[in-house]
Length: 291
Image 1 (cartoon, rainbow, N blue to C red):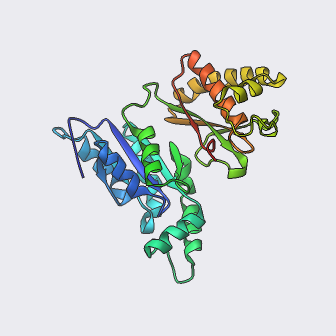
Image 2 (cartoon, helix red, strand yellow):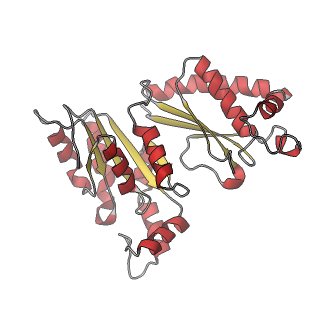
Image 3 (cartoon, rainbow, N blue to C red):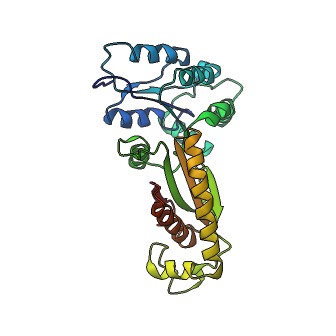
């Protein structure tokens, strides 16, 4: 555990499914200078908050890693109590697919905290997933670690929690993805771009991506694209300030096409450029552009 400077300016609570990477995420934030308390019983969360704010403390930011096990029923009340203290609080919920979590547990030979004589490992994971649905609903951001290696998880956590985050009160991410690779779990709004003609069926465009000018020109020149972009831009320009006013910390808008290489990439880039021209700060990511 590490600490630094003056008063607590932020609390981050990392919770979610066992095996989804809570401790690894906490290690990354510790490297950023957060004071990390791992495997904290939920009922102690409000007390830790009081101590961290006591006069003379030298703790600047706190990360609380909250597991489940016998404490699952205490997690949500503890988070509610922490929010009532008026602190700047962000809750990150980590999850992964059941098949991925089974492989992780089998490789480490660890026992699942909710394992029982009458439940298989997969059943224990699903049981925990069901128990934590209400906690997930309270999270500011949901991170699906199914396809993330340790370096990608580090990059994702740095994006979310580094000091370089915008000062607007909400971090907005515009991303693209391919439906054939599955819907992104950690997204708020999903917009389907598959109604546009697909550059994949144009031989000279197939090996390119929506980041390349020929593909971008092909997508943006289609008759529907201009009206579509105008409508999406107006919609998001209305929604983003409303989300900020409601205190939302993160917003992810995902544009999807079949493979995630052409249409969704070009549209995501165009929407991002239009919103930046209106003064919005945001990040852009393309999940499947290199598949």
